[in-house]
Length: 480
Image 1 (tube, rainbow, N blue to C red):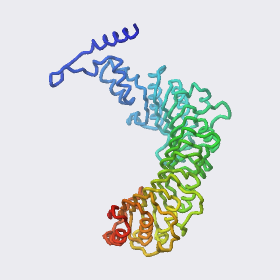
Image 2 (image 1 turned 120 degrees about the vertical axis):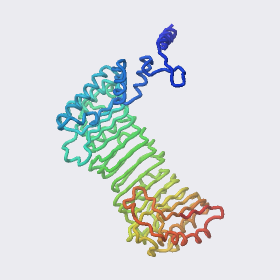
Image 3 (image 1 turned 90 degrees about the horizontal axis):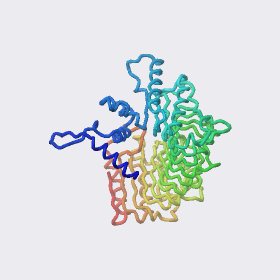
Image 4 (image 1 turned 90 degrees about the vertical axis):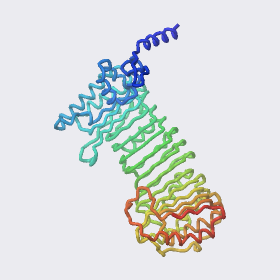
């Protein structure tokens, strides 16, 4: 009976839909003729701003926009004709409060607030968070950061952690994005975010202990990003492992050490000064990307070897780095699962004689299948004759039998580059493709405008004949 009544009511609604004829003379349905439930469903797919704009097209739609479950409020919502910061802030507060009142008692899937923080916003922000929790909001975003020069804007907004003291208030929260806030969890009663799956923190002021307390409460967290969060201390989450964490990103953070226990972690991205990194039980780590600044190449490799030996694909970019005169790394470990490596190096003239020492990486990556080395060097690196010959390297005990593909970019005919290239080819009996490119392909190079002289063909001719003699008969050689 229930199904019959439902289908009958639906049929009656659709029976009143008016039809019109389009340019081809065929009957069509106008948007304003749709049933109310269908119209609300359509408007709910639009951003709040677009839904409000659509509501002015018909008097019947005037309140239909309130069905939109995604609310976004920003500085652009304030009229540009309003002069003075206090007046603009007041108008923004009024706009948000009016918008939330329209949704009072309804579920709201997403709430986004984007406005530069100032002290008069504190009480309103706290109220907006209370509303979000009562509206069973799944995605909550507070972007309160100024465009630049953060210290000039004073203190951060203190996130009201005391509001999160019962499971009911956070049961629906799945995604949390916070920018320019201060985390100070209360000493008692704080349960954290046990249902949270995605957390993005930008310019968050907190301590090592408080951040650890927050992260340890996120037992279902799958995605974590930290940008410009300056702990000036270690960041450790080992006391209570993040068993569901799959993605971790740490960029431009003042941190002295990273130590995580995350058994399901598959992607890790780091950009910042060199420091020790340890990932416990990260046997499923598929992709790791690092941009270390002020680092020594061999020390970085040794640290990564100890901290994440199970990585499958490694991208390592080094800025202002140095190379050491070392053929091997003093480590009993090897990257036993590493199959694809990208090494991006900014080579200075004083290090041009050490390029061949990159073989120290290959000694600890015996199962590698694809190798990319991207050089970015000064103009004086062209045809540099400094450095040892590959014959001076201690013999390789095990050949790189899995290596199939090798690519070198930024090739300038320097002795170190040519010797490294020949060493790899001579010790890779199953190699299938070799690419040597004189163009610089270094990602985010700090000097992309370096002129390329018309001598690249001479550099390629240096290695053309020797490579053809050493490559297997069916191997493909591409010189660009």
